[in-house]
Length: 328
Image (cartoon, rainbow, N blue to C red; front, side):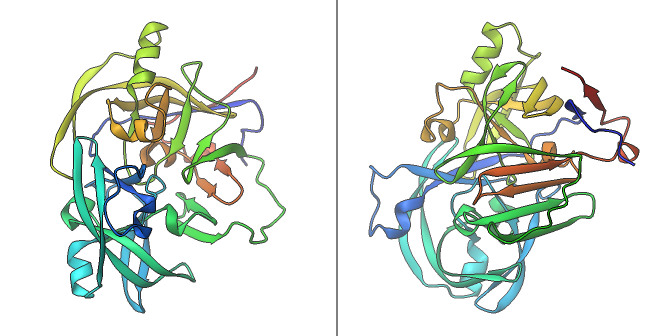
């Protein structure tokens, strides 16, 4: 029997570790014959650690499977260079990667048919990056998920990808909290969200273990005297460059009626926020380590909603988690 039924839900997040790398690739570049400086970049987020990220078996033109990382922070599906060469995928065009630390170029390859979770997507044009930097054979990005509902069941260790319009059971667990979201360049930005009581744009990023905040969020927290103690940390990008930032525990990250407590966040002056038009607006990318606190997270890209299923009280690790009803 679950004991949480109403009010604001609080969940404590413990543990502090950084293993991050990010890059951005233009979504429209697959239609462009050459590099175009006027094309706005889109997210491709990668990280070297597979400890927490979620993978799915992928078939390419009937071959495989290979375990790709599901990356809701990436607007493009990405393939590792060694796998692209092994499959002799034909080269297409060049794209610009805007990483955390600078610009570089990458080639794309034509993926004739990509199969996953009982479905297929034809004619994907995927950027090629080094497998050592990806930490996996590839990333399954938003170009493959834009009309899908992705369900991550952390309790059972299973996941599912279905059409957003697929009929689902009308029975709703009373501990499921639904948070509405708006779209921006394929991303879902959660509504009714705040950090330490301040309104913040929050996006879910299953491609990185750690949560990342922009400098506008850091500066506002400091100005309002709501900032945590901060320590210097270094971020390494997929190009090998480094960027220095600050890391600390955020007391409260609230999404609708869900409240995460003591969330480790790395604050960096990173270009991805600027590319999404959020350089001057407090914003947070919530990583997979925070999402794993829930029994289940269902991200419905087609309908613009995210379902959070709270953990059963009996399953909570008392050294890492706490769940409370906080009455308004």
